[in-house]
Length: 132
Image 1 (cartoon, one colour):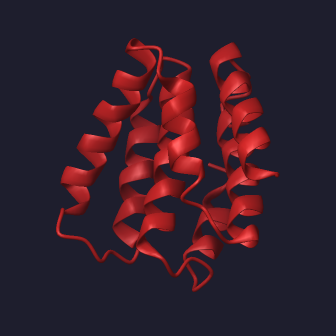
Image 2: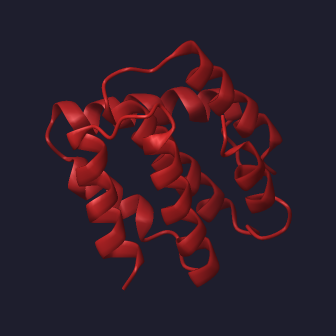
C-alpha cells in the first residue's frame, strides 16, 4: 500500500505515548472496517504495522488487534461510530500527531480507489475533532 512509508515515519520517535499509538492504530483500523470489506492484504498490512509499533501494555498486540476489530464492528452495528471515533481521536494530543492521523486516515480511505460514504463520514467527523 502506498502509505507504508508514512506509517513507518510515525513510529520513528514521533509517537512517544502508548495511548496515542493505540488511538492512531484504532482510527486506521476503523477506516479499513468502515467500508464493510476487509481484504486479506489490509489484514496483513495492519498486523505487520502493529508488529512494528513500540508496545508498553499488559495486553498483547494480537489480543489488542482482535479486541479493537470487535470494537470497530460493535460501533458500526450499534450506531455508535461518532462516539467511538471521537473518543479515540481525543487521545491524540500532539498537534503533529493529529495532522499525521488525518493524512493517514485519508490515505487509507482512498487506498482502494473508492471513497465509501461511511469512510467519508468518518473522515468528516475526525476532521472536526482533530483539526480544532
